[in-house]
Image (cartoon, rainbow over all chains, first blue to last red):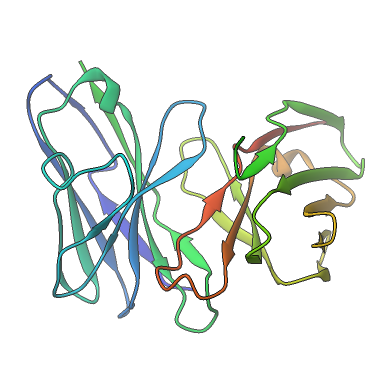
Length: 115
Length: 113
């Protein structure tokens, strides 16, 4: 499986600011995804990060709030904009397996607290 | 109604017990079924992956899928304290293109030494 790293691992931010989370993979992958895991909750897909085109967002998530970049096949960023305490969550990137369809491997996550 | 239902627990068992974790789902299009293990403050780790119906065994872990009942299970034999974690079931449908996963809410397991 691919080795996935995320930066930062955690951060505490003030209301109204923005934070950019980086996801780096050690091999080229076709599919990259961003999930949110709110305290005590399961994972919710935010968007699919498409290389060379705009991300595909799930219902309830918009580009202005969660802009995503994917400049190449090994890297993606998720920005959480104009943050509020409700954005306090763990943000996880995942990559689609290139050998097994519909299987995903996850990064370690970024734990965000908004005050 | 959620697409995937999973008892959140917590489930507490003594060391050496057999653990049964379960999920039910409503979307008959789901074909790929996965179990992830998530330790506290870590990302989910893929444990088992099954396509369509049947059983799959890997060491102490056995995954079962019953598509007729829309029910999947993960069995852990000879449970160890190191198995203490949250277990998430996840599934996806064939041909979605986006390969998006739908997760259960997770079951928190505590194995007592």
